[in-house]
Image (cartoon, rainbow, N blue to C red; front, top):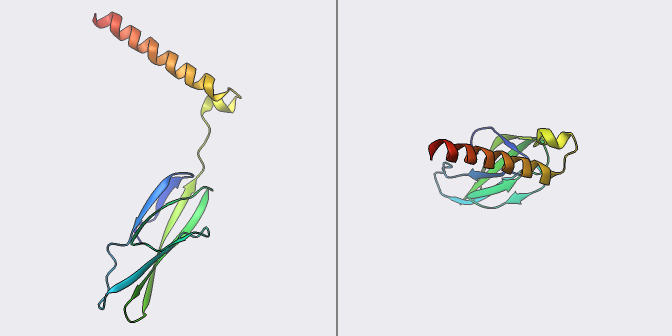
Length: 114
């Protein structure tokens, strides 16, 4: 199932079972993401919307009915709000400030190098 990972809530994570092997041939793959979602693919993507630690389980079945499981821990961190947002500034003001700062930098560079 891969190495344990950390991501942010809302981020898409890719999972891949390509390294799974079996002596009689694999017939199915199943990813259980630990949040109620199950996907039956060799490779799958998933988005965890809530912070926390999730145990993702890969179940591989072969032609004679045997199955094997592997797990990976996914730690999902909450996205923290931008610094100015914590003070109650509307998001459009934050973007406007960023744009204004960018324009000042461009102006300074144009004056300096022209």
